[in-house]
Amino acid sequence: CPKVGREPSRRNMELPKFKYHSDPLKSGSIIESDAVCLCCGKATGYIYGGLPYSEVELEDSICPWCIASGAAQKKFDAEFTDFDGIGGYGDWEDVALSIKEEITYRTPGFTGWQQERWWTHCSDGADYLGCAGFREIKEYGQDLEDSLKSVATVTYGLKEGQWESFFQSLEADGSPTAYIFKCIHCGKHGGYIDFD
Image (cartoon, rainbow, N blue to C red; front, top):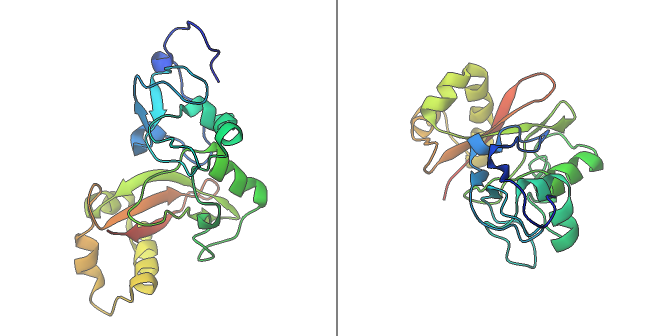
């Protein structure tokens, strides 16, 4: 964490590196803000835009440095992703405890319509890329569409012929939306679809 006292703004400094969330500014999980971090007491220029799980109200009040170092977890017993949601509550590959702990305690999460899930692949957590709708998924390619179709068919009981209209209704900033990940080992894209 930054030291308490007068320091230059971090807004022009490089954000901490997150193995499982490589661009939290692009995904919208980290936002530019003049808010003071409740953990380190500094206005770093950036703040986590989500709501960590904690007994203390921490919405829009934790800087990325305090997430990366684990200081927010230690100080507030904060979780940024549900531990059991890593691997989709058993729907995807199980991963080592150390990976679950890094994603839960030291990685910016994201806000979903329902309980968030973190895609796993190649025995590891995947890199969260952000929300996507029909147009964005088409840009990722057919493999992602096929993966989401498979998950949605099981999750929502889609019948033959229902996928295309469901798929075309997806919106990056609406409902339903897809949450997109990329395997950090093989590069495969995956994720899931949710709505309000």
